[in-house]
Length: 509
Image: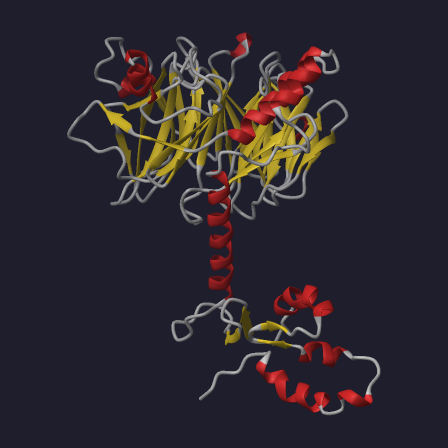
């Protein structure tokens, strides 16, 4: 049986009008359609050629059918997932998303990329700077924007101190860099259930090449890791604080682990190792203020626990909702909390007597559950992201948003945001698996980076951005972990894998 498409269905209708063409002085809309066939527009109707593409893309919508432009025909679509029906709307949407992702990947491979702002390029910025038309701060910020638009993807090979193990077999779930970005704490899913966690060490050469080595001590657990932060107990970033959710007969806890514990080659003593009986913690944060430099907090269901890691002294604050995100300010001992209800509030640790709602020093709201909060260097400002994909910059003094960063995609996932103030950048990975970078100053979307792998809820990339990735000799760049692969997006456009060896060959020549 011949398959029907929407163009063929109109042909008998066209022929009927063609018979009476001589009786009309003015062509109607049906006459314009009559000049088209499968080969293209006819010679006697050049004025309608510009509308041919519009006509093919504007196929009438029929309930229960999907029009495929490539095959030029309709397909029957049933709602939901049905094994008897190979075509569903979800599959069609996934196909379209995958097509768009491949297109963006191809554009990213091009040597010349689209400028983040109209007319913005390095030579023009340098010229304006020499003429005194551009202040130094604006010049540095705009140069970083140009560099971000020129970053290209490079795959990193992860070396292991244990030659018998392969670190690339398990999918990454989360990576968190320390303050110097020489070490990155990783959480990986394992095939038999549960997860493993450890530390990757990064080093950068003077020529800009980056090397990665996985630690030789990996820890396995059947519990889910909800939240991670670096802790400064003995020295900066000496420990890692983990929130582990209970599983089966194993209760949840908050563990404080020394970073030296993950390497057998480290001659230092492991240091303080603690496990606190705090179950079902959603979030955690470590305080760096000198007055409370051994204090950490955990966000739980309808309460916040603040604890001294050395003395064990505990303070509990009641809240009206689950606390999903936390961060301490640095200059003053104030803890900012983001709740499932969309409320954001702060707790001043110096006011120990208040434990109920009166403990909240400042309060403001967003429209959905808060997934991440970040305090800026100017601690009067705070960034907050929620499950509607909204990212707002708040002025804490007047409790009003002063900037919004549009384009982020989130519906129900627990996704962090990342801030790099020296470069003036804000980063976030959406539930659609795209990594987006904004200008922190004006909220302009600078770049959207597609995932190297097809999008899936269990394969959302985890990223780290640093001004000196790999230590003091490192260059600014983005680190992306997705599936079981690790990618590096450096500022250096001449970067190549194994760049150190290639540079050495050039010197010999």
